[in-house]
Image 1 (tube, helix red, strand yellow):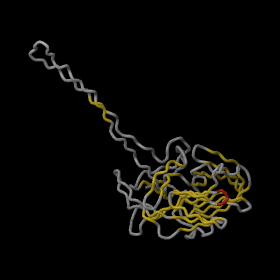
Image 2 (cartoon, rainbow, N blue to C red; image 1 turned 90 degrees about the vertical axis):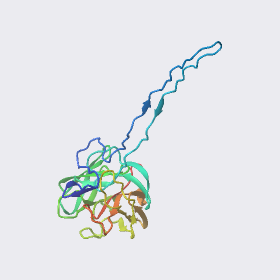
Image 3 (cartoon, rainbow, N blue to C red; image 1 turned 180 degrees about the vertical axis):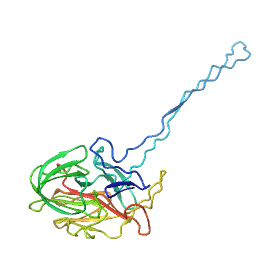
Image 4 (spheres, rainbow, N blue to C red; image 1 turned 45 degrees about the horizontal axis):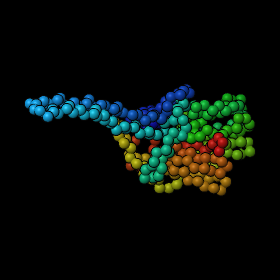
Length: 306
């Protein structure tokens, strides 16, 4: 399991962590490992057995058995996700795989997060900005902004490429909770007319908690549904894991339409938007772990070409 504390990435014995890094083509979420290789047993040939020979009787010819080839089973390593599975470095793709589910429901593995300049100081910000360009890289989409004399940028990761205007005036609202420099933040980008372009959470707090107003994402509304469900226990693999997280469901509302999105799922919203919830997890109350009691990592965006 991974955690960002004070802008640092900590490995807490719950799984691998990925450090924030520059754009590259290396994978960020791990790839399946294949073990074993075919082995071939040599053929066994019996020698000719001869004995006394009489007329009309021939000796038994040699008997040869064909080589036997055995192929061991192929195993793959599971792909896991945690609060810090997404970093600033590049990986092989946004939406990576869809893998069945557990008692709660289906699980889809993808990345969904937005960073402002790879992290900003704690506080509440609202800037009038002009979009200076959009750069679609292998995975991360970078949006350049000029905000009241400041140069800002957004690093966006979504299951599909986001459709972001390449020019125009916008409003950028950001809250960085806590008291330390961090990438943890809630982010909203709207047009000057108030139309929602992007909304994102990458933090352990939820709108309505101290420091983040309940209507921060307006015109989008966000609410947690009660009674989170129990996820499947994680498998060991050499590490000691805490018990399974409680998977939460977020209810998004827009234009009078409500859509419920379970942890590790995504659903369509009005105005051609999509809500992609990479993580919405809570630890059981009785459980004491070295990582946050809850974590929310999601993006509402408009898929390119959607």
